[in-house]
Length: 140
Image (cartoon, rainbow, N blue to C red):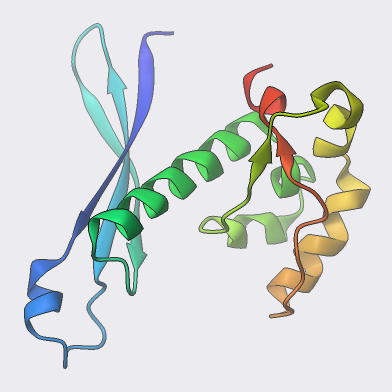
């Protein structure tokens, strides 16, 4: 395949200038699928962030969106379940690790392990992720 997905984020300067405007997001992001052969592109999904505005928070948000996209495409973590509730986690920020990857690759795609997390999270519960995702799971 000659397509790639880019994550582009940018701050909303109008929001920063008019802090009293509460409904306007501080930052916007978009997933763009680019065809490298014919140079066409599609805007796949727009996202909003209520408070990211400085360079460090924008980079962190961009990295989080890219990780989330990769986890959905590879069907790992909460996206391995096929659970309808996982669709509500499109802005969820997971974390990865690169140590002892062979020991827990199966847990990255264990639907039982992730279903309870999805249910609790979507009910508004403050539940932590059952585990960090192995970086190897994102590239198999």
